[in-house]
Image (cartoon, rainbow, N blue to C red; front, side, top):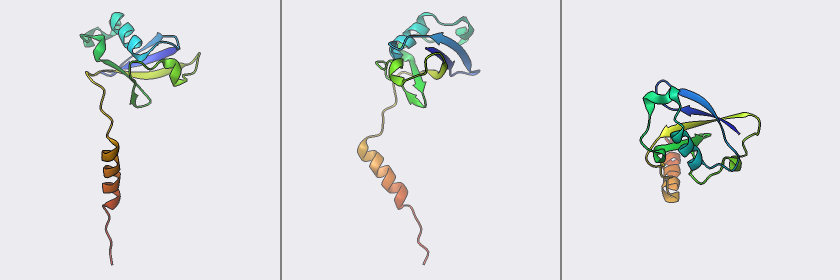
Length: 111
């Protein structure tokens, strides 16, 4: 599977890598760290553990294989690569329901 990784820095960097469907997000991050591209040398990171992949706007957990994403074989797929210590926490169900309710209850009745 051809992945075009977009390293989110200024300026943005793009580079193609090739992986198998069994490769996980953690493996890809480790591979990129171990084979850090010369083109990205001014934006290095200290550890593979801070590298995170984003696919279709969602952070991928390290155990997710790229085969599980049903990426098309033989075509380039694009993912963002960012340096971030931790994945963001999803909102709790209760908080998400409260947020929805609060948004709906903000209305104005004109009599």
